[in-house]
Image 1 (cartoon, rainbow, N blue to C red):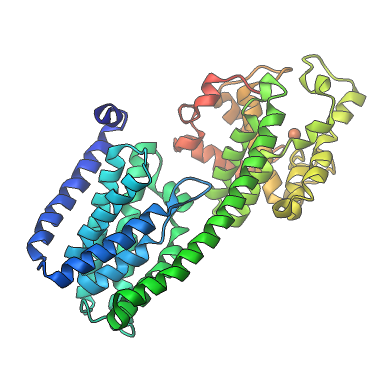
Image 2 (cartoon, protein in one colour):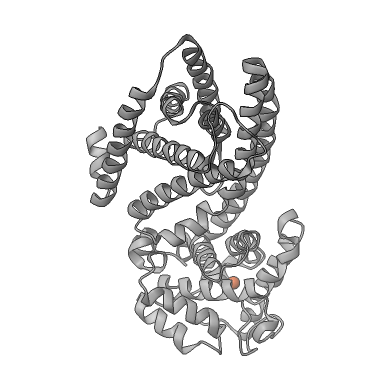
Length: 435
Ligand SMILES: [Fe+2]
């Protein structure tokens, strides 16, 4: 089973995992020769392995994939107290035991890679700590330079290792992965490194009992964060369910909202918008056509031409949609994104004939994403066109239908073969009929 899973990985990803694992193995053999296994070391090993196992088992899964744990605080405290040799073994044992306890179903090579990259991170953190003048065991919490050098080294090596594997597996640019996934983990790592320093200081002065007591607020913080993430998960699932229910009404719109949201998010990230705004654009892109709930389904799916009166009814859907989402807590401030997703840059759109930058940026982004998907997936009244033809249309309509700057960014992504915009990265676009 293991081999079959590895066969599904790109060759370079397999090679990379082998290299990381080999390097970690060499380090572990070297570290083994450096450990003096006294009774004191053994009891520290058991105690911190237990902590690492518990923290590794308490993963808080994030809505966009990945998870966070508070393990880094334990790892970092161990680096400062015992150095890399013992910490590397604590890391590996903690990861393996927690995988067994939570019955993690992930492929075995994922655990191998995670253990491998953790050992390398621990080595890098120790190297930076010693290089900066830090002394293991005697943690001087005021000697900030080696402490910070060590934490930053861990973060850099860790994020680099993960960015490379994700880039190889997902065939995406490392920069794109860094921006969307890892940049946001830095404040988390910073906070945990402070907790790690505190934990090392408490262990030096109050031993195991001190660390055990310190662990209670750490678990409480994790519980509060998990509750927040659970509520957020329910919220996002509800938005997706609403969008899917709407798309399911018509075979032409199946998957449409999800793809529009994906295009819009990528476009927003290309523009380097703040993550909070990106999230709002994603939510409103998912719900951009929610107002169609209030429009007769027969009108929406009719293949023939609509009368002027009938078209006027269809044109009400952005206003109805904006009214529907105005009471959703997170989206109250961005109902304009939905209301104006059919405005055109030259002012000939609806419902308010806004033009240029009077149209909110989020709405301009959704307009482009919506139109591109409508062109490439076809409608009851119009056949789909190829991706190349749709890009030509985006170019032709830059400055009239679309914001010229956004159109340029979109076209550049296409020309630079950025994977998110290519048809082969969007399986459902190729295989599914949609609206
Ligand atoms: Fe619409």
